[in-house]
Image (tube, rainbow, N blue to C red; front, side, top):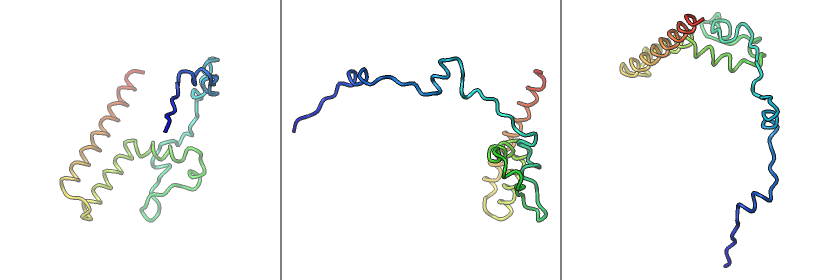
Length: 130
C-alpha cells in the first residue's frame, strides 16, 4: 500500500492567511473585548438578588431573573463575604443533619473563613490606596 506524504510547509503557503474580525479590529487599534459593561446598582448584593423569602428559603425575585446579568450577579454575590457566610451556614446545616463529620466541617469552615479574610483584607488594601 503506497503511503501519502504531505509537506505541510507547502500547504500553509498555498492557503491564504485570514484574520478573524477581532484580530482585524485589534490591528486597527480597536479591541473588541474592551467594551465597558455597566452593571445595575444591585449587582452582586446577596440580600437584593437572593433574599430570604417568607418561608425562610432564599429565592431570586422574578425581576432579577429577567436581567441579562442574572447568572454573573448571583455568582458574584455568592463569592462575596455574605455569600461565603451563607456557605458556612450550609456547612453547619450539613453537620447538624449528619451529612458530614466533624473533620469535614472543620476543614470546610476553615477554608471559607480564609476566603472571607482574604476578601476583606483585599478590600481594605484597595480602600487605603485610594
